[in-house]
Image (cartoon, rainbow, N blue to C red; front, side, top):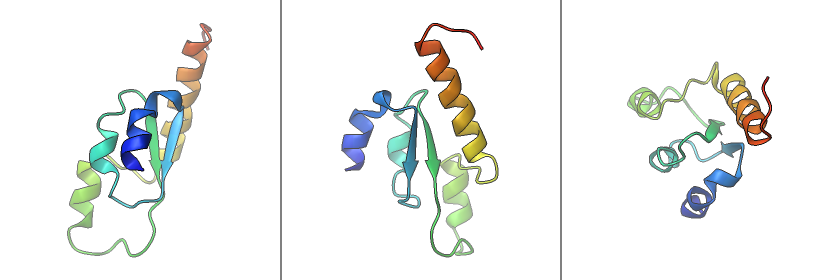
Length: 82
């Protein structure tokens, strides 16, 4: 399923994952498509911080950034300026 999402990533404004860190290697191929990750379960397990830093996840700003990028991409697709 992740590979299918990856192949069609360009057709989405934002891709929302609930797969914890499983999708992180795939999202590197998305180019300008923004992804949002909803984390489930414990977040205090040793080693997870490094995984999420490597995956460029910023939970406190992720949604706001994703929305801004999606809006910008949508505006550019329509040939309009903000």
